[in-house]
Length: 375
Picture (tube, rainbow, N blue to C red):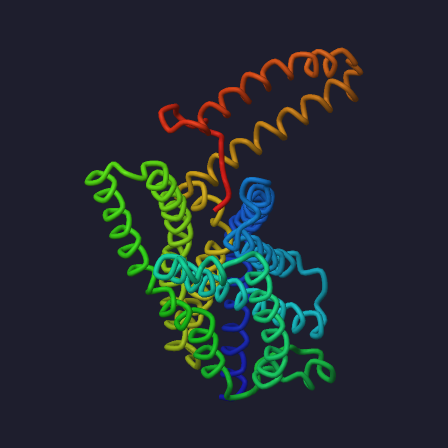
């Protein structure tokens, strides 16, 4: 009886290992594509948001650090897929880096939500509180506290002595369920609750826009002042919609991922082969869905942010012109290409400058579609 049971157990282990290898091979290229696409998108976010027309705002600071934390999450997933090392110390370090980056990326969204609420509900205090220096200070304080607190939590759940003695990085015995609940609450559920005020922010912004439009129709005095108020409100509305869209994308990807993540608890201690396979499938799919939250921000910025979309187009044409100049000047050795381009540039520049000056001094001329100003 003991020999037959041990043989059956060995066959189950072999079957499970074969299933894990085959399933990992099927989704390997999908995971690689998500990582590469997300890295490219977040690098583009860093390039576009730090253009001269967008970078001097508190929101650009938060978007910059959000992209950096998203890149960190995607890099950790990519390193995990590459399997550079099998040592337990390396695996524990990778788990720690992944958890820290994911926590920071999700809670930066909460900070953005608080900042948008201050801008919409208290514009007077926003001029003093929502500055570039205060935004950077908030990020530094938040990241410093996270770096201090995370090693403590990590040492509670992970058996670090076993990592050095037995070369195995694993969660402590009887801490599996508590670790899942801890990650679910701190990484996703609590931030999701803090993101709910975005609904009231959109409502308050729409009401303020409606009141400004009604005031401009009733009274014709102080026309220039009202036009500047409407333009400022329009810029704030566009930026708020863009940032709120990112918060909604958080719900779009984290809710299905958390459902799959929590369903695994049902089959956590089961020894049935089908339930173990289902647990592994749900674990891998939850990682992919949650990873999309860090990989798709550039698409949502372009979809919801008019000014960001304009800056992205400007960036594309700027780097395209630089690449053409580099190709003709250094690859084809065509010295006249740069000279002809430089000769024709002042004419177009003077015409564009004249048009910009006309549009900036009078409200009756349409503004240039590529003219962006600071928020």
